[in-house]
Amino acid sequence: MRLLLWLAAIASVMAMFTVWGPDTNMASGPPKQLERHVNGVILLLVIAAFVLSFSGRGKQPPAWWARAVTAVAGVAAVAVTFALRAKVRSEGTGHLIEGAGWAWMLGAAAAAALAGVGSLALPRPKPAPAPAKKRR
Image (tube, rainbow, N blue to C red):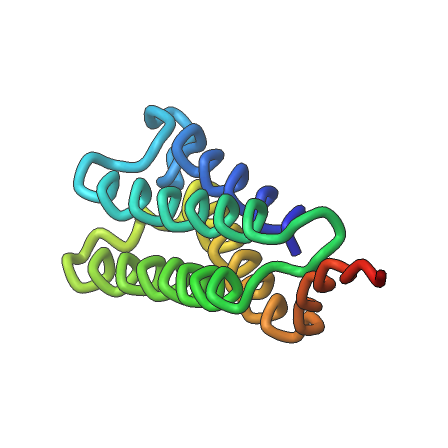
């Protein structure tokens, strides 16, 4: 799950460097009116990857709170992505989401949502063993 989240975070950053419209002569990156949404998705995915990566110890699965944060962040990234799509279509500028940038962002958000919700299915973390008492 951790690897999938980090790959999703990297893929969301790729959305900043690819063309967003159908015209390949356009400058790379999202249009100015969409940058805030794209940066929000990137931030959500990076936070989710950090939380899930640093909450478990060694081979221990992550804590429940980390899994919940990751699932919420992944689902929120998908929600922001579809809200962006609805906004662009309602403004009559639907051509802005026909390029590869939109596909990178949607794929990254979907992968993060899958990893976040999938992390909830991991086994419960085992409590640390109590220190052994010395016998006299």
